[in-house]
Length: 360
Image 1: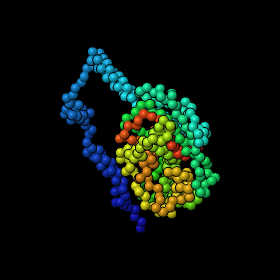
Image 2: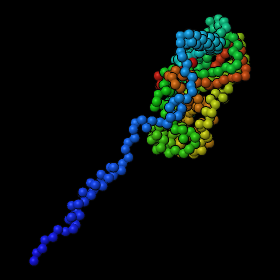
Image 3: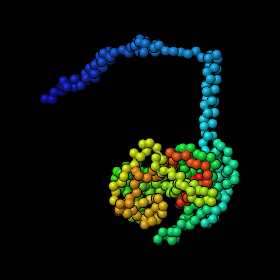
């Protein structure tokens, strides 16, 4: 016999939605109702309600105008004092980038006036009577460098019409040299300057690219980057005071130390690399001068040390404008006597390659 029954489970199944709906209704009733807007405001305190004591000036024409006129008068006087102080600085600027082309060899000739500018707070008629002169001399190439570009020494003759009190500074100046270019400014590895090991691939893949790895030897370039590669390498000797016959009388000693900013030397450490593991920058290889390595490689015991070369540190501090001036020598102890002087310059820097002018 076949018997049909409605199972208990089916009844439970059918009644489940009803129970769920009832539970949802109960949960909804249990939810807290949102508080009225008036009860959501911050606490009624002086800080939360911005009632702290304060001074609220009332600006009127009788108070603002005297203040503006007073400030204007103060800054006008301050500007006049600063301008007068600047006029008291004695300055002589000579552009010698054309010395190798226009100056006579082993002879003396006047420097064209367009290359000379000066400002002395005393009478400077002596400058007209004895205008600056120049001469050049060919520097013999070193062994194995007979095919290198010719190098010259340029000698400048100039007159100081009145005594220059301490301190006396010698600067070199470049124009149209964009040290402020973003790619140029970033082209240095600070870790390498602090003597922290960096592989050639690390240098090439970071900011020093493309001057981080030597393409021929595969070694690391030290110091790497565009800034170090283009370091200024003209040299200056201390000026020589001449007698009436243009013969050397005495040397005005100038120091190449203490030309950096305070704390700047902490960015450089003495390297402990092996000379066989690194190579000089491309423009240092085969060059002569203070940043030149004629063989193209470092020698043991003669690895470049940036912590002891203040000229390098001055150059690595990039300038903010395309016309830059950097300190080369100074004298803080003795005044510079009036008279005729000569200054010997090692004209090494290839300004034509950069489209810039040589120092003045």
